Image (cartoon, rainbow, N blue to C red):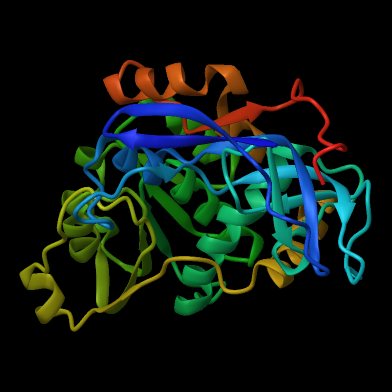
Length: 318
């Protein structure tokens, strides 16, 4: 058996118990250890306001970031073995049967929190790879939520030194600096003389931030819309035409397995401070109440880490 978190109507979550599917020859059974709430994408879905799915469809499962342990393998599985800790993409389930190609083995010494970020760092790396900033180019990022801070981590790891961040919440400025931002400004404090950015990343899902980037980048500058929060439409300003800007979109990751190999080496070699993105840590049975509090706007953690440590074994279910 498994339990999954289902959204049955706007702002209405419930745990559903169901039978696990049969284990196929190339499948693995994963017992969840840790998951995460991806606030930028899950909250609009929770509230029924996501522009990505219209009209909203119910019921639907929630989440896509999981770390678990492999407890059973199909007879033809070759990539993983029982006991391996893996990153997976099934979200808020206690157990899941998934193809072996859809899990990524986590090396020893890497925490669940760091491991789970291999998913979103791959998504942000795709946008960075599309724009291919050179080390000497100046970069501006709008938004110091999860996507913005992980974009900052990626461009700094790729060797870009001059990266500035715009973020309206002062509480997020210190972490942006810790991750390597040269300057961190409130939107109203961005200097006029700073309009010389070759590359920019929109990571806030806010049209006013998109307008700011169009104003701040240089002639023929490149802008990547990395956040997909689907909050409001984006509008091209006169700067887009006058400066002949290049604007591209970027969504899911480029290759999760290849990226994870690079990412795991990177976080093993250097202290990253990335675990500080998880400003709220909860147990699985607090998920529903946490979504309720997030939707009310009373708290604004960058990310939420969810522990599944007290779920039972399912060795008798396969």
